[in-house]
Length: 311
Image (cartoon, rainbow, N blue to C red; front, top):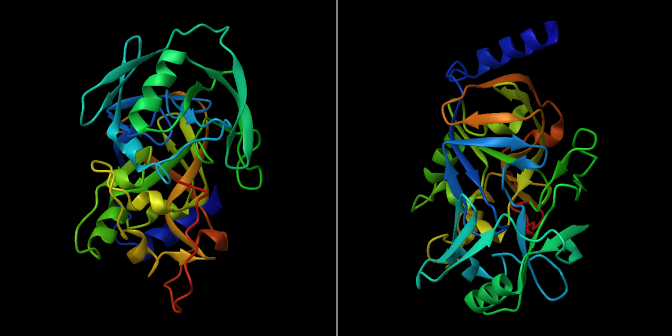
C-alpha cells in the first residue's frame, strides 16, 4: 500500500496532466479476425476478451489464418452484430451474408494456426465459405472458436492461464487518445484510431500513458498491462479504401523504436467479467517499472524490421 502511494506521488509530481481523470472514450470489437471493427457504447468482458471479439476467423486451405497484411481487400467486408448472427456486407457491392450464431454444433472441426499457436476451431457452413471466397477472390473457410477451445497466451508475460481468442496474442489492446494525438501532430495527414485496432481507448493523461499501466480497473474488472504492442504493415492500410502507404510506421520508427520493433499501444490480460462502457473511469493501481516498458528517444537510426507478431 505504501509503495503504491509513493509511486502515485512521484508520478503526479513529474506528470502535470496526470490529475486529469482517465476515462474510457471508445470501445471496439473485431468479430472476424482482420475484418473491420465495430464501435460500441458498452461491451461484455468474457474470459477470452470482449464478447464476440475475434471469435471468428478466415483460414486458407492449410487452415492457416488469413490477414489484411497479405489480403487488403478484407477491409471491404464490413461486420455488424445482429440478434441472430453476424451480417457481413461488401462495402462497394453491398452484397451480404449472415453468419448465424446458432450453427450446428456437430459441424466438423479442425486444428487452425495463428502465428505459432494451434487451436481447435469449428467450421460454419459451405454457403458462408463460398461467399467469402467469392468476395476476396481467394479460396477460404470461416471458422469459429468454441468456448471449450482454450488458447493460452504467452506465459512469459501474462498472468497464469490467461486465454485469448483468435487475436494475434492477447485478449485486449489499449491506446490513449493522447498517444494518437501526439502521433498525428507529427504526420502530414492525421490518421484515425482504426489503423491501430484497439479494444479500449481512453482520454486523459499524457501521451503513451498506457505504456506504464501495470494494473488498472474499469468498474470491478482488473486489467494488467503485459507487453507493449509491436506494430506491423497492417497499420499502413487505409481501412476504408484498402490501399497501403508508408505511414504511420515511417514516423513511429523515428521515436517509438526499440529492440528492432515499432511500439504503439499496450497489450492487456484481465481478471473478472462484467460490462465496460464508454464514460467509465479507468483507475490505475500500479505502474510498469521494468525496462522493457520504457521507450527512450531514438538516438541512432537502425534498419527497421517490421514485426508481424502483434496487431
